[in-house]
Length: 492
Ligand code: DSN
Image (cartoon, rainbow, N blue to C red; front, side, top):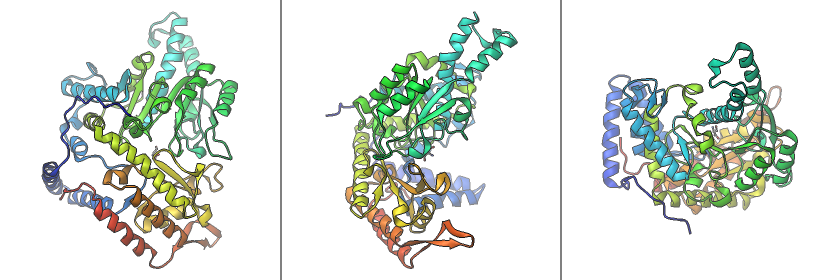
């Protein structure tokens, strides 16, 4: 049994009036845009039509509600508000303070976090805020104390250079990119791999699962200042109690990037040791993936790190996007409604149905299945690269993204996998039967796709899709899409 959420914000249940009011708002907005730049209005209409007509299976995408989307189109966009609530570098931020406070309050209540920071513009920004907050708390503050100074500006040139040297000489350990980690978890081409001495942990080569004993052994040897947990392409749950135990043993700060699965945490699908918030010192997320809010980021932290997180702007962030923080407040209020828990459970149930749909049709899945919101299909068994599979599926109106699989022979550009997630189509109302049919359609496309040779040998990008496949699959999808309309009742 999951506890009833405490809902303090009144969000109306979407119904006929809601759709009619939203339709009127969009029609008016598009008329206004049309009067200035009709091509933007046309592209906006077409984007809705395209999204309505395709099977969106990108694991990191969703459909935010009209309330969330409309909140972003206001004059809050025009306001500068560097600093934090009640402590701004600009005048007249009283209304920004209101919406930022609301976003933070909803986030604290929803996730049971002592502190929330609603300003990050994206997940990458949220991770940068977290890294610098950890460095400020664990390295800069004790360094200043050691030198008898209160502020970096009080240091001599020489002492500052010494402290800068320490800040730039710390260690981070995160999940490797090819086993499902994110590029901001210490990947060398990313700034995180340049800021820190970095080492990765991977997954068991046989099972594809996290091996906590191996992570502990690697952490004992490497002794990272920051241990990062979380993923963007790992189809399983993580035991955050075990990750915290490892972090504590080696004196690391545990940072969890829950960008992908925040909706499953908010919706109480991941509870106990699978809920990162009680175990992590700092938790980061995006707000637009399974959480179904506006594009943006969020940082949750314990009291120990909250002052440093609060300095995210202007430390690493430009001025806060107040219109997006307002939309985060609306989305988080939605996620506190009991319906969101049913949605999150359906996301996980649907991912299982999708995985079973592939397995029974001979598909090979990394880790053999899923217990979160995504599956990673190894397309080498169809004789394809991820790039070929992604393009052929798109031809048939199925939107996925290619993704590396562990020890990928085709590298991170062409890849050998396709990542598919259930958050978006679950929002449209798809259930287990529809996801089984989605698996059938995906397999139909892939079995009818042939790699073609390039002039210089086998191509990793070129392919041919057998005649009639795209049309057949489009027709199969159209039925399900019509039965589960995107933004029901919304007419432009
Ligand atoms: N772009 C996100 C994803 O698709 O997983 C991560 O940055």
